[in-house]
Length: 317
Image (cartoon, rainbow, N blue to C red):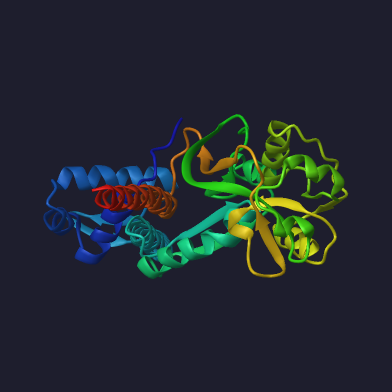
């Protein structure tokens, strides 16, 4: 025989009877009928398989078993109420956690500032940033190990969806004293004579660079593979070769950008998530923040173009 279910409502009525000193008083306090309270009490006793009250006429007296169970019932209800407070805090972004996975370029040069703005708005949310190559971040997002991923444009693993965030551009970097640093729009064919430094396999930057070189009609075998953009940049600055990196990674650290002749290559930075999976409130808000930045960036670009157009028209007039 299936025993009656244990519900929070039954535990609440059990404690109400103890606190009020009787079924009638508990029913009035809870604004429900006395028979309904009695029925729930019988269901609770049937669930535990023990008698909780001694009945003498209209008087109920708690049994020793009821007194043993009482603190546990109160603890259960306290925990449920606390869980509700936690849930409301997470929903209101007063607490919670957010883990973002990012490939090297956005993780190093863009996301720290974005996470800083998020922290200013929601200081109660604990933030974590995990930086690895694109393929590893995709795997972690697909496995649910991080809330969101931010990567360079790449073929996505099955089960992931992406939003475009920002547009990045690849540039050639060379050492400050390199002969190509003094040339304006050098031919891509000159790269055949250079030692090519590349990111490791699985890096979105490397994949995009290889597609760009193929578009330029140049095939280069890496003379050196390094696991981070910073290492690539420092190797270039030390005169160990040339590299293609994100424009975001170009700093005045001995490596200078060179614009090659021919078409330029741009790539999208993507915000990825699991298809069909609901985001936590912090993750949903952070994604919203990033996409708002994309929209704001487009508005700034449009305003800049309009301003230049007005200046051009004024000059022509």
